[in-house]
Image 1 (cartoon, rainbow, N blue to C red):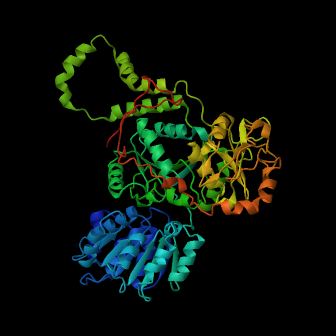
Image 2 (image 1 turned 90 degrees about the vertical axis):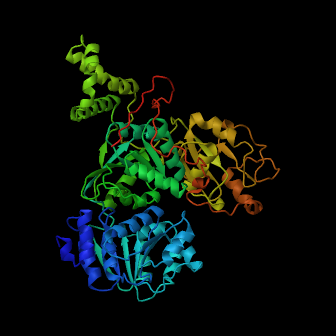
Length: 633
């Protein structure tokens, strides 16, 4: 069907569609709307992010509910506050000519009493996050016992965030004969499970292939050394002067850190993550939509509420833990028929993840090199020239022309042009003239996390640490623990190999003294954590440590005991002493984002656009640092 009129929508909705400027339905809308209007049935709809899923379930729900009734008839569950508000606002726009319509958003971070009052006034449709909805049900603030339609939007993300039990509890308060519509961009096993549990013989529609990326997005990856990741990010921004982007990090802590570094270096950037208050999140998103922020650094969860059609780039500063999440990230750009670019900054060991993503999204990545300093200088210079050429003349300047002409009376045209553009050219030229090449070769080592060579000529140090799987660690959790305790970058710790009761990890040799010094008499949860240099250069198994390269700490205590250490390899000694140590071993299980739970407590610090000096790549400071100009549309 080529027009909305052919879908069977009523005049009030068609009038709103005209006002919104919608010309023809997207594929998912064309498939879902007639099906949902025709009969009451369960539906599973799979479509990429940005293809108009909200309208696909929003228009049918608005047409089928009884506007004259004050009973809650529709419930829409979404994973995040931003997405909840986005859906509610869109439904209000779709139903602007439906007199008496009340769509209420229920989410955490806002007054629960205000939300309850709005529901009590007669909310035909409730859009809610699972946590706040469950809370209001337990307080008898809402009644969903008579709903006719329920929607699980972004169902895969709600399950990834651990909302399965909340969803189960919420839907237990709804009628069995309701219609359930599930919309998602990906179809992992968990989504199939929830469809089987809560739906009866659902019809499935798929736009494109499952988990496939939209054709409007091109995919690129840039191979760099892990330590150059941030410098690569800045170069990609400088090489695209008109960039309007979302930058994805894996954790809230990294998101905040990258955003603050960009702000300090003079970029118009902001952070969006779960540790922000609702007011802070609203301020950041308003600034981003107004283009006061050109580079929004976000976590995957927070970015689910970003509904901006003209994002030019998505930059994966770190690849997601779940490969399927990449589909959601890249879907932030290339929306509403526009084209976009999804960039990935990777270290050597992560290139195999690129291959895995290609299989899932059924698209090929193009390997590109990080632009050189002189290439960026040329791009910036021509960008300025084009802006000057296209600028409309402001005739208010005419009264000042005489003074300006007198100043440049002895200056010919060519010299004047050189002087004018040198103001911008010199800034980038001085910054980049001695910059190094950040691109690295495709050859890789065996390292899971850094692609480094662990042969005898390696410049890395291998360490033994007396914690392992029995202590609740896997390789990612141990890496986060070491990074947080030592205040290192995410890529400063690599080749993490976790065994049952002990583990190994590597750092650059220059960090060896810092690592060993920090773990002198270090206790974690009442227990000594011991780190020593190991002879094992990355092989499987325990291996004997090179005690001669340690610090002679044979008299160190372990686990609170007072025995001197024997000469057995650590793996054997831990095995023989396991009975004595069981009582002292922590049973805790940290979650994957433990480091995020330590709040930055930085208040509202610099979430909006900021002007500052650009730090040179050598990280040295000085008065010659260039200042990045900002463009406000």
